[in-house]
Length: 291
Image (cartoon, rainbow, N blue to C red):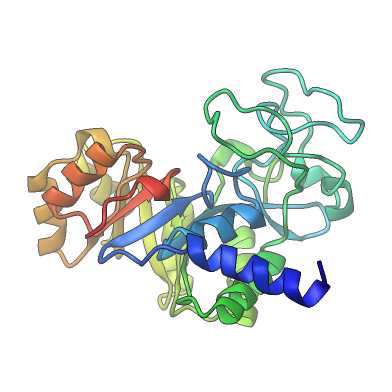
């Protein structure tokens, strides 16, 4: 097949897989973790083809100051193989990204290992990308394919016991991310989320133009969580099981959005949308109801 004909064929196949975007904010968790290796550029492209409005992803930092896309600040034994293609022992956190250069990070394969929790994942060799490279590829893809520009829900992963060991301090980490996004995108389509309230508090004070999402493990005590944070962010993002319509209504009265995570069945999504949530974070955007 001639190259030009092949390119046209690939474009037509991709277009046939593109779904219409939803009226609510459909967020692809780590791209499309249920279908593709998580937090990879191919996972983000697949999410776009499935009609997500927002790409959800996580960040880590290398020894040489590169912001990369990774859920853990180390090579997770569940999804990654060593540079020699060997297994990393379960629970081993010694393959510390913050102690590696970006070049060293690129030696690890985090896409071919079978993931028992996501048996539908397409498996192939993939490495952890720089955030800047992900932006470049995604923005070019939507332009070339005539797709709507996506939003980005970006998690800064940190904890007090990891400061200086697995990641920079909240200030250093946040400053790195803000500088990169300022250079690449601006803030019209970006929000920052974190479980680490120190990150949100610093961002709120230093960068008031940035939309923030507070990540919490449960929606059982929303007022206590807000009091602990000390201000009202733009988005409340809890693990979904304890969420109620009353809680959703309460946040709406404060002018905040409610976007729960990680919702992986159509039935659960329908129930939450009936409560009035503003968006859904899911590993399976292909299962999202059409509304």
